[in-house]
Image (cartoon, rainbow, N blue to C red; front, side, top):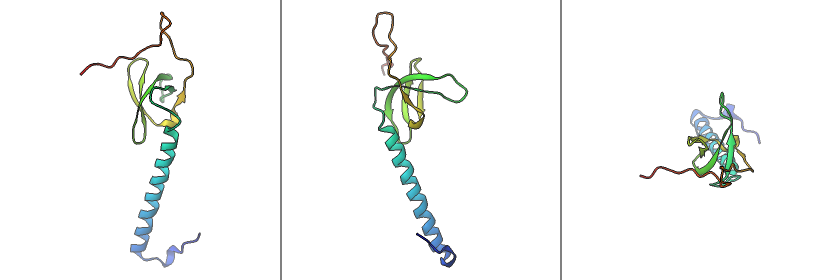
Length: 106
């Protein structure tokens, strides 16, 4: 598909630009959504933030562009889904039970 932008008016170029930007935003959001659907809340995941050790935690929430992960140390992270990996082995405590993260009561 060829578009002759040399013959287009200023207003037509601005309109074309808006359409292109909207289409790119839509494609980005569809890609992010597809990446998010690889995971479900409750999944054990890991990720490696720049300059830090690998973090392990539980996915607790979907956001618009990220997912919320509560790490095994209790930290809350909003992570782009393409940076996550599923963890197959769940860490267990001394009694052989899965670790449970307790949230503070309001």
